[in-house]
Length: 145
Image (cartoon, rainbow, N blue to C red; front, side, top):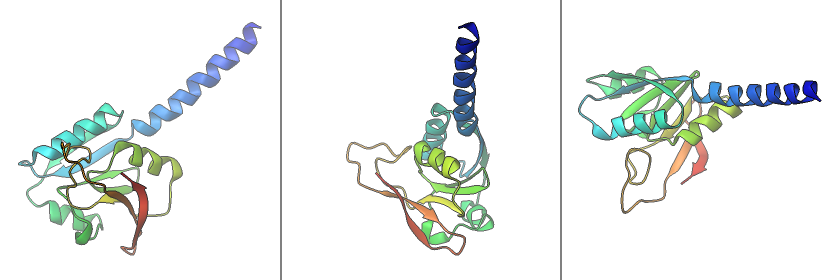
């Protein structure tokens, strides 16, 4: 009986460690030092278990371009995590799903700054989509919000 309980506890611990490891992946965020909503998005990620390192840059567009994210999908900040590029106010749950599913893609984008997205909380939220961005710049809907 003790062996069975020990095995179950070990399985539970390993399972939760796997989830924690996914969420605790380091996120490198490149943002303008003058943008408050970027800080709110960073806080959203931290509250969802991500380790976040921020880099204030004067030219977010140049950082985005360097990472290969098309300008037409641009927002106010660009991030890197687990070999993917994340553009804009992407919900933490979508990033966690990306890291779990590991699609062959450049990353995720929430173009512009939709009211109601993480960091852009609003009393008048609008529906928006998180896009999966392919290496050639094409996109498909990854999640609806």
